[in-house]
Image: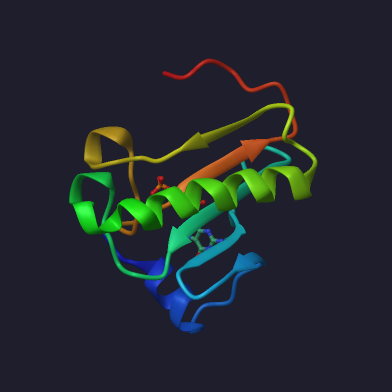
Length: 111
Ligand code: 5GP
């Protein structure tokens, strides 16, 4: 699996950025599955939740708070979904932790 998100963090691949601070970057998904489809990633390379350590707890909490703020800014705070795929069985394609923030339409059931 190629880590394109690392290239995005380094600025080598452009992105449609919606949020950035020292630790976190959020940008629009290149192939959106909903009117709002934003990826929230840590700048630090963590492959997925399986590779998260205790040290990463504050970072993950901050990512969730950033998601809430983006949902408000994008006008979807009345209903949105946060998904993070972990490993091959989940369909994870990019080996860099990311939350998909999706909203702006009635979302179907998970499965
Ligand atoms: P995963 O299946 O790993 O959870 O999701 C990876 C997501 O990254 C997919 O929704 C895909 O459309 C998105 N993606 C892959 N490459 C790029 C890219 O270069 N730029 C952006 N903005 N999104 C990407």
